[in-house]
Length: 109
Image 1 (tube, helix red, strand yellow):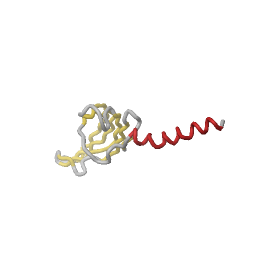
Image 2 (cartoon, helix red, strand yellow):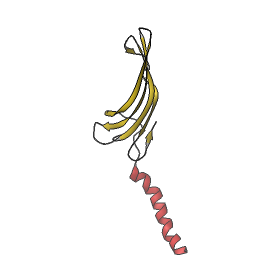
Image 3 (cartoon, one colour):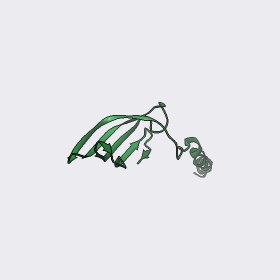
Image 4 (cartoon, rainbow, N blue to C red):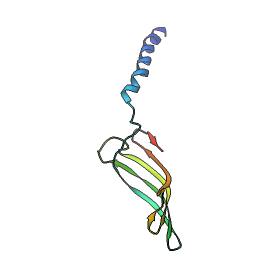
């Protein structure tokens, strides 16, 4: 048993220090372009003649325009609302919650 531990200890230490280098980290800032496709439900509520409240729930897939990289092939689930005054989105135009899960299981909230 002692021989197995002597062999396993350096291997465990090696994996502990090499794994972060192999997997790397995503940049904390940057930009990218994407397309989202999916399905959702939308409910518009007219508030007089000038205002409209739009509530939505959306399930879909994100495709990074580069064909790889950040959020490529990630699933998404969004729940939120948009308020419009005289046909123009009110600021902030989108209030909601969005969850993106990439193929590796990483999440962006």
